[in-house]
Image (tube, rainbow over all chains, first blue to last red):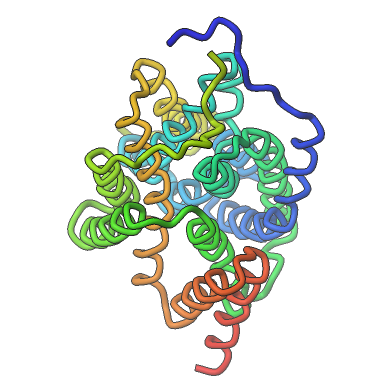
Length: 244
Length: 103
């Protein structure tokens, strides 16, 4: 099917409201950013270099992992492999948004992907499962999360960690709890539950026996296989179909 | 191959990390633009999408301490009971702090 006109209409008001919706989560991202900034300068990165990395890379877990491999000299291939492995979930996340992304122009499509992170993707993917199309959260949510990550890094670089021991306050679990809440808030039917069981088993097996950082992709693909062979009956009132 | 962490070297490393990350952000969308979205493909990417979250969380629970486990279980139970994300997340964070303070 070829779309000559791109049918997805961005609503500026919704972009703003999604930005505000992600604001509470972004406060925690500031705290993580501060932890990263502190770790980066302790590993010998300059303040501006740390800020540049957060601004351009904008992928927290992979930045922490790269910083762990920092020294007087850095081996390029291992850093590339680790960054790719940790961020390879973006491949699947981007692909999963494609049914919506095909309805925006390529420039906007790839522009939106610059702001793709776990949190805003989780909201968009979950709403899509419920038949709502929300690319505004990728834009608005992504912007506020990106700014929070940069501001957090800046605070960490110049003022150190914000909290003495963020782990004792449970702060390290914010993102995990958020993603879990999104998963459980989505559509649940026998097909999804079987996919989850398989995804859980495969991700654990990969975590235990496969190379590090492959567990997300392994689990997600295993869950996807359930969908590949177990098709859902289309509900009649499906409103995600595009106009003919 | 190694890069010395001089100013130029660090900039090169940041650039390399940026390009690798961009490849992951763009790659899935790029590949999908060559795939015809049949109902089967749509079904695959939909179940895959909800499985991504499970594949992130389950190993996190197994790798984590008692606090991590408490946070995730309390979030799950609260979310299933009241279906509101923010209270569920808050309860999970509180559970982690509680468990780590007392145990």
